[in-house]
View 1 (tube, rainbow, N blue to C red):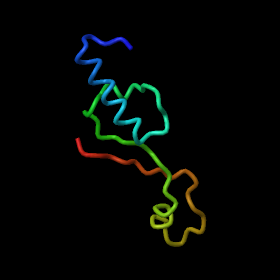
View 2: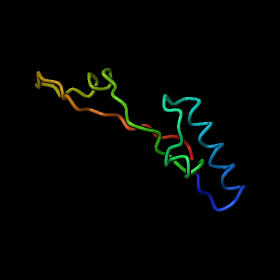
View 3: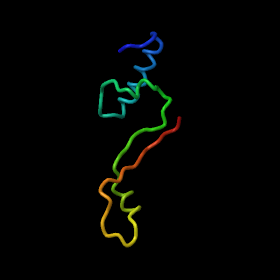
Length: 73
């Protein structure tokens, strides 16, 4: 990893460890360079949400419905 200084490198590695604790991917990602300055946590499919948002009178569900998750900054 290329980082400006030792402190920055340690901060990026800490952010990566925190993310990796709840992520399936165990390698360094670009998002780790942002450290804790992010709000966007990801996209996921939620079948229950799709059922709740189903429009009345429409018998077909929307195949590509994604839910964006955000966290506190």
